[in-house]
Length: 110
Picture 1: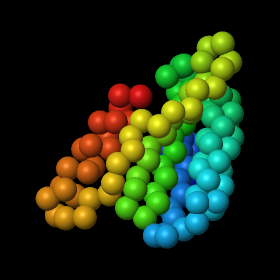
Picture 2 (picture 1 turned 60 degrees about the horizontal axis):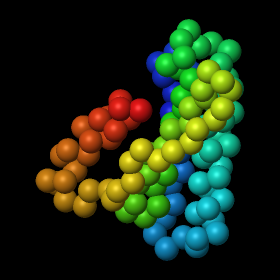
Picture 3 (picture 1 turned 90 degrees about the vertical axis):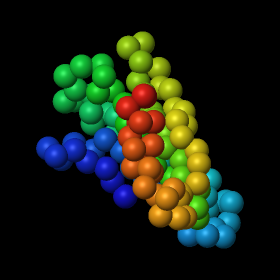
Picture 4 (picture 1 turned 180 degrees about the vertical axis):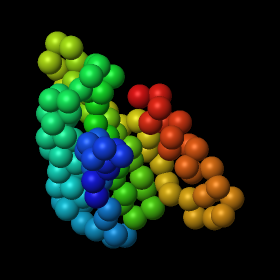
């Protein structure tokens, strides 16, 4: 999955794995997310208007688990990759109701 802005700029990528996927395939997809984020970050460098735009985002869903990650390029040219959210997808109507707000909150912090 590719995450794009209204003007077509790629700002993130994601992978979805079904339940009981082997650990080796999970790690391959996690690596693929970082590689895609780095490629997208290089594209953003071309059009960035400020240093705030020097970040891309990853979403990894593995069964019920969800991870949100950020790849950021510093002004010194160093990459920083970190997971900002690691939790489980909602399974009831009550827990689902706040999922959108929760994900937005975590992404806006970083």
